[in-house]
Amino acid sequence: MNRLIRVLVCGMTAWLMASAAGVASAQPAAGGGQAPPPPKNLQVLKPEQVLPAMRAFTFALGVQCNYCHVMEPTRDMALDDKQTKKTARAILQMVNHVNEMIVSGTGKAAADVTSVQCATCHRGKAIPETPVAPPPAPRP
Ligand code: HEC
Ligand code: HEC
Image 1 (cartoon, rainbow, N blue to C red):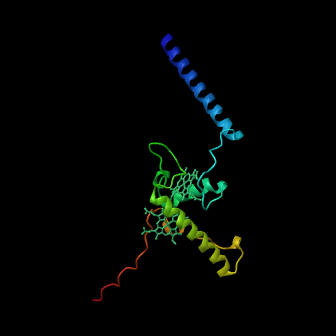
Image 2 (cartoon, rainbow, N blue to C red; image 1 turned 120 degrees about the vertical axis):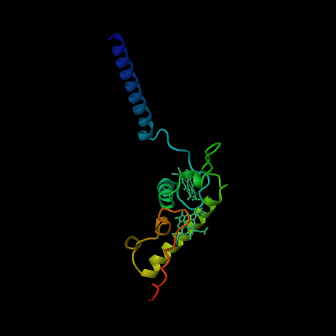
Image 3 (cartoon, rainbow, N blue to C red; image 1 turned 135 degrees about the vertical axis):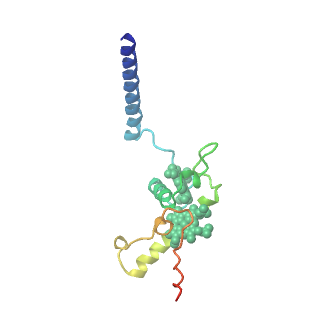
């Protein structure tokens, strides 16, 4: 019986400590105390665009951050060592250009056009797949 109580008390203590740690680590982020380091190597995006853009890239291409970024042995998102990151930056510039052309070409307001996004072509694949029309059905 004593043993059971001790196990329960230990479990509760561990749970309380874990909750306290959760609150403690959540608070600085909410208060802005632990902001990520300022970006060092942005050539296209504005700092406030980075995180939403990165989420959109990973979702659109069906990859993780390490597909474009050096994460091992140390995480350094500013490095341009991977070709995939350089490709992504070039394509991002292309997409921005295409979207400007869509606005001027349609004569619509920027807010009213359907803009091209990474997912428009990629649809969850790192290399987009182009649908190919099936060959005509053989005639009897
Ligand atoms: C498809 C490639 C790709 C993926 C996937 C990707 N990134 Fe990036 N990331 C880039 C590019 C390109 C830039 C530079 C943008 C620029 O030059 O404006 C960048 C820049 C950054 C920066 C700014 C670094 C600095 O100091 O200049 C951070 C932080 C970052 N990415 C985090 C992430 C995180 C976190 C993920 C995963 C959720 C992620 N990225 C996924 C391509 C990618
Ligand atoms: C107009 C269609 C289109 C759009 C929009 C587009 N891409 Fe791509 N992307 C491609 C094609 C096609 C390839 C394949 C190139 C090749 O054969 O290597 C590619 C390849 C890539 C690659 C290289 C993948 C690899 O494994 O080599 C990256 C990274 C990439 N795109 C990132 C992006 C990002 C980030 C965006 C949004 C900012 C984007 N793309 C939007 C068409 C597009």
